[in-house]
Image (cartoon, rainbow, N blue to C red; front, side, top):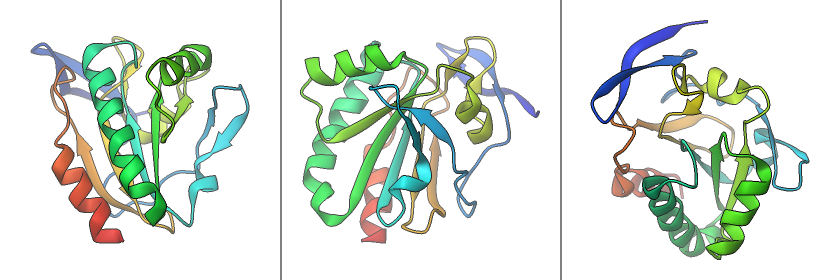
Length: 172
């Protein structure tokens, strides 16, 4: 497994990402993750829609909370156009369900990678030192090809929302 030291930082401290980065031009791996009801969900189940796959460290942190709320709002506007927003974190499915309900976030799907961190490794965003996911976003076309990738270099920063939304709109 590849290790990329210094690929991201947390409050200026360099961290190591595990796995090979999946970026623009790559095919999104067909990963299995856990839904809030503990059922397995394969990413291929979203084929036929534009997929915005959002990796965050934890929904229970301020930046992840803001980011997921923002993408929930955008999903409400774009969902009818065949766009699905999916947030992946290492949070337990029960914590994700609680967060979604507490925040009225019904336009975004939350999936958990807590069991074995396989998605984080296969996407190249598992933070070795913290066993959390780095903040990253993939915009995936209807056939499963990655058309846009953003790795937020400072984990405590919000992503460039407009760049993500422009990438989504380019596929519609």
